[in-house]
Length: 387
Image 1 (cartoon, helix red, strand yellow):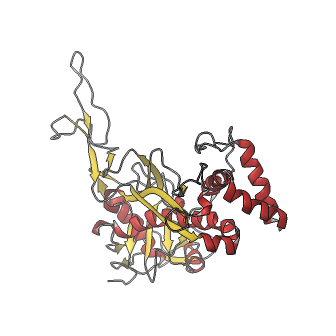
Image 2: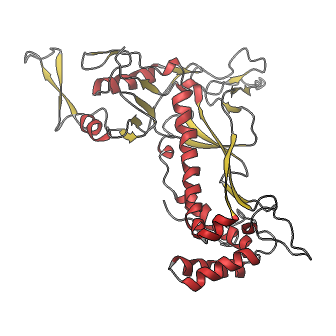
């Protein structure tokens, strides 16, 4: 992923809002101290420890941590982006997807104004245009939720540990944010599917019959593709143009890719023209109907399970998406500042601990969710049990 360039590196083009006492000069000074501390400079470590508890350097340090956190968050690799798109939503209400095909009704919702293939109606000369209104599909079980946690340590622990705990804490919280996104998407995939996604089984071009919930194999994957193309959403068959993702348990990709990269050749059964061909899988040469399948390993698929689904953007309608809340697309880091004031005035650094019990508290907050559209009609799931 290419590194994002910002016009204003101090606010990341408005994504980070500095609080009172935070300036570009002070942030650079704290950054210089931190870099020297990480290189093992004892004087810098002592200086940094002192300024964090006796000045507004704590707020500049928090600003610096956020400036590092957000770009690292943006550039981090995400497994879920291989299988899901992103949809920003304005609030916490159930998400509505407005139909993209055969959904324009006459206002009473009783009839479809468009043609059977989704085209606009013909208007005879001198005749009025009909009214048509797009219909929405409300997914009651899915929407954006708020997630996060707090972590704290005591003033005594901070003094004993110096500032070493601050070196790795932002990175650890970043990993939690990424794991949360994975859970939102893969959790939706594994919990929101309906019975329509089950591999029903049936005939394939080789002449074999694939059982319900068949174990992984070439015939089973081909059958899954056939079943998706036979399913309908709003009266229109699902068309996949752009390839497929095959989700398998961790450690299975090597075996699965070996099987998928075999190719299909046909041989006449008795050597005479017009006879029914026998299909044989051979490793070299021939036609491979599974060339468009990419294998993705994930811990969310276990045992003999496997999922086949269109790649993101390969269908007219979205299949699986991660929901984000507008204005809160990235995680936020907070430091609790309930420290009171020194006698005689003056703010107390959050790294001096809370007024109540001398604890230093950080909070991570993020918003998101996952959604499978149409009950998973474009997705095929197999338990691999063959029953």
